Amino acid sequence: MRIALISAYSRPFAIGLRYVSSCLKAAGHDTFMVFMNSAEVAAKADRPSGMMEELLARLDGCNLVGLSLMTNSFRQACAMTRGLRGAGFTAPIIWGGVHPTLQPEECLDHADAVCIGEGEQPMLDLAERLENGDDPTAIPGLWFRAGGGFGNSRPVHNPVGPLTTSLDDLPFPDYELETHWVAEEGRLRPADAGRLRGALHRFTLITSRGCPYQCAFCNNSALRAAHGDPSRWVRLRSLDRVLEEMRYAVDCFPTIREFHIVDDLFFLQDAAAIEGFVDRYNSGPALPLLFQVSPLTVTERKVQAIARAPLKVVIMGIQSGSRDTLYNVFARPTTPDRIAQAIDLLAKYRLPTEYHYIVNNPYESEANVVETLRFVASHHRPAKIIRTFPLMFFPGTPLSERAKADGLIDGSHQLAYEHRSTHAGREIRRDYMTMLMRIVLGLRNAGVPSRVVHAFLDIALRPNVRRVLGSRYVAACGFAAYWVLRRGIRDLVLQPLAKLSRHFKKSPRPARPNPPVKWTVPRKTVRARTQAAC
Ligand code: B12
Ligand code: SF4
Image (cartoon, rainbow, N blue to C red; front, side, top):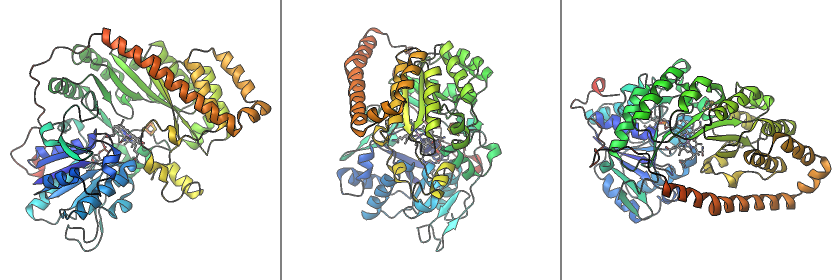
């Protein structure tokens, strides 16, 4: 069966959709992928353009279209679906990804079907049943709109299907470039390293699915609930299989310069597995690594082991330094002391770190914000990068439900639909406390001693000082000066220095086959469900 898979994300990574694609290919289906290369291109898909004409020509003969989205690409997915229907495209369109999993009703207003949760098995079943002319509407995990092209005259809401248990049995995500296209302004172009916006420079891969914690602001808690089987929610790939994927990737794509392990928490892998991984990684791909950890999973043995690998950056979500906020607002089972220990360990082994804090939290009392400021003053160690994120109420999360019940947000919190990237400067409320947070983080990052920063806070928190500095005019000027200074230092000092050091530094890449190997998804000759790779 011919199936098109479209990524509505603004950046062409879409690991989940790539997994769906390789499972379909492994089962013998003729699948191709289309990646939007920016939010703007996708948002204009309901208007006539050269890109849409070329896409429609390529969709000719397709029996099914799958579209992948998260909340901030919902509007783009709507535009894309409208654009296809407006141009007379009639084959069924199914949506999947984080947003359809958490907001299926909203998505079913636009798509013919939505996939709740993992998509490999439901898509295999759907393709097989459509191909055999069987009724597709009883497939676990799929919801169908009435009259949506699947033969059902009433809406069908099937319960979610079982989770993929053995991640090692899945084929690698699909990077067969000759079956991939990138939608640019005005054109649909063959995918290559240049058009994939860094996806083949910083190669993303995932070593686990699920997270054992249930932080109230995090989509993971909502996804876990949507999957219905919490006992099996966290699954790990073996790091041998991960290494196999890494080696294959560097053999296929000479452009790869670093690996980004995008797991929620890479340190869910146990210490012995990480030690073994580092030994083999250092004699294998040995490219700089980026990954995320939580203070809860940081242990000395893991940090010591990973410190032996080439590291680009280790990202840790701190979120707050207030015990009350951590426990009673974020439902995050960690204490400021535990976080401080994790910071100390990462510093002890000199890991390059990036720390994240959540600001603009309407549930956080000012006393709690001050606690976080004091925590930063006492414990923050210079990080490569520090980021502050405004609290975002993503649909379906426990905190979003609470905020809805409390009347803080309306039914659909529009900011979550607009939120584009980690650089959410536009969304950050410029209040006095947020400004102080940036200053205090900046001071500590620049190595200003803890007691000096505490003394600065003593003054800045005095009511009369606050009245002057916190006035709208001074705060706005303070923020403007901060951004100008930050940009200036970045563009005029840091970037030229980085360029210079790149110029002198030899690439750490080992020699590799020339010409490169071609990425292929192994095809099975038999299409039956039980014999497919998934
Ligand atoms: C990797 C990742 C990224 C990468 C790549 C994103 C991409 N476009 O591919 C980067 C770093 C770029 C990124 C950025 C952002 N991300 Co992000 N990211 C993730 C992360 C950690 C893993 C996603 C992943 O690959 N999962 C593994 C795969 C196997 O699962 P999956 O994607 O869900 O796919 C499965 C199913 O959903 C389904 N499926 C998916 N598509 C389809 C399509 C069809 C047709 C079908 C049938 C099924 C199907 O089948 C797949 C396989 O089983 C998740 C956290 C998480 N645990 O999901 C957050 C997550 C998706 N990101 C999130 C957010 C908010 C963002 C940002 C907006 C904010 C930010 N942090 O800056 C930006 C926006 C980027 C952009 N402009 O597109 C939220 C999304 C919340 C929401 N409600 O939308 C998540 C859930 C994080 C969280 N816990 O809050 N992200
Ligand atoms: S530890 Fe991280 S990924 Fe896990 S629920 Fe909390 S915020 Fe989400």
